[in-house]
Length: 201
Image 1 (cartoon, rainbow, N blue to C red):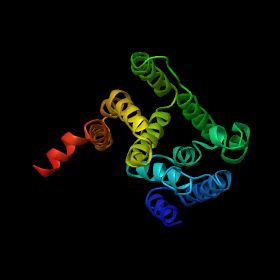
Image 2: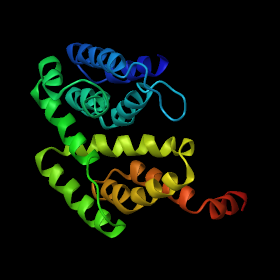
Image 3: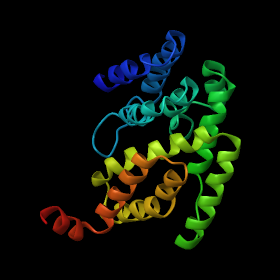
């Protein structure tokens, strides 16, 4: 797992050895939990949470948030329970994972409701722990980077949601590189022809 090695290398630059050890344990825990699961790209599923964690390392985010990034889908998508996460990695990590799971479960009747209500829910999550939002933004960014593997209808829906909800939140938090990339990727999938024209100009 070359990406896992790169993640550890990046974290070693600013985390304590004991924290890096916990991250290694989380990588292995997530790998086992997601064993047999694949991304639409055909990559092993564990590649996604590792990529999400790597998006966060330039922010020098703490070890708990990195571990939560690595485990953000285990409760939703595997047989692992929140209690098991808490027992293995501590209650704060489990609470971060639970916060991310709650955001993932948000569903709305109309696009207008989704834009307004999702935005409010995410702001509320920030009050409890802003790290939930940071991991969620990194999760969305990696999903946008790999969006080409989804059917067109889903690509358009995810791209629109990204530009309406996630990019503005990144902007408000001052995460300018994330904001620009989310905006650019959203524009690319919503206006592919215009992008091609602009790239040739």
